[in-house]
Amino acid sequence: MSQEKLTQFVEAKATELGVPGVSVGVWAGNRATYVSHGVTSVDAPRPVDQHTVFQLGSISKSFTATALMRLVADGLVELNAPVRRYVPELTLADEQSAAKITVLQLLNHTAGLDWRFGAETGEGDDALAAYVARLEESELVGPPGGRSSYSQTGYNLAGRIIEKVTGRPFDRAVAALLFEPLGMSSTTYSLDEALALGSAAPHHRDEDGTLSVLAPWKESRANNPGGGAMSSMADVMRWARFHLWHGRSDTGAGIMAPRVMHQMQQQTVELRGTSLGDAMGIGWFLRDTDGVRVVEHGGSARGHFAELVLVPEHDFAVVVASNEGPDSGLALNRAVVRWALEHYLGVIDRDPEPLPHDQMRAREVVADYENEMMTITIDSDGSGLTIACAIKPELREASDAEMPPDLPAAGLGLLPGDGDEYIVTGGGLQGQRGFFTRDDNGAITGADLGGRLFTRAPTASE
Image 1 (cartoon, rainbow, N blue to C red):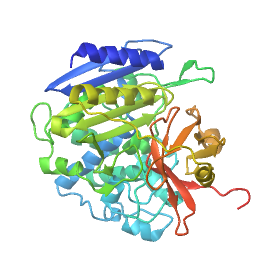
Image 2: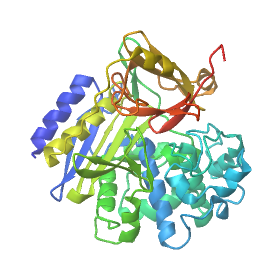
Image 3: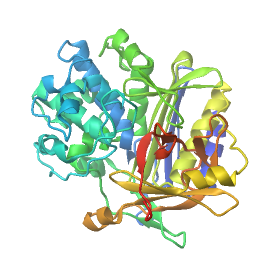
Image 4: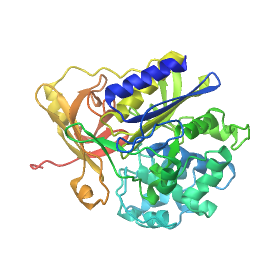
């Protein structure tokens, strides 16, 4: 596959979707190919290249999981040990859960913790400690080990384990354990450092479709383990090779034991009805696509989207980051990944087809569903289902930073099978999958989207 063909596709797709800037890297045939298009900012344009720094969002979780696994390999942490062995001060709303949650359950999202906990605890070295001290205020979605539900809170707590075991603030511990030995000099948790290295500005579209630049911003320091890393695609490609090569750096140095790296790519829990994957390893989502095993993690941040996809059996990786919100950035990244899988490996990745609309089934699922941060509204116009996603108004009012816009209603279709799985068929979340949860009486009590549980909100008559 020539660089010219990749360049043509990336440029055409980015232009079609109106994404201001995108950076792509492909590792295939023992060679890295980089393609970039567009600018870092529509207000102060500079060309994007493989050294431009983007926010990685939840790809950061792969850093956290790997750092913790390095401590496991060194005999300093046990995966099946209770978290309280390392963070004895942990307190949750439910004492039994606080006592039972294990390290592995944090890493494979089965700890029963909610998606997000919005405590702001400053930018000092004590930010994570202060965050964990407030976790008794956070909500639980179930007992430890009971179900998988994607949790930023769980990964932030995992970051606190790293702090306690190493005696260093999380960001400096991960740099020493991973970034420095791997030569990832353009990877940081500091916004000031990212700006100095040359970062892409976040963008979103106004109601009239005009692109606007958002002020430089990142997650608060306590959220670094779950989503605070920033990096260039050249550095993310180093990270991809490190995992493809089971713990060896670009220089050939063995940073981690191959058995531990292999363990991270093995199933620890099965997932249901999500585009994130068929299963969860340790810090990675796993899925079988067109006969090959794909290991991946995506990430979203304010005005940035990133994807990291590995195909270990082919020593293949594709990394991509764009600097626009879900209207176009997510769609561009998914298109690039699918094109690369098809044209480099012959692997076809398609969305499943939904069932014809059924008005009786539609009435059963129409409702508002919410978690601590967001509400999704599933509605029906009589001819089809729609889904809309909104940040809770009280969180918008309380935030000092400009938050991303809500996602307007887009199509949703139920999938074959038990009829409780669905796929978003339009808008910024097109292709995202989810499923409905029922109680023992068969009544729908929740909806999962993006691996996150949203609880059904009571209606005015309930």
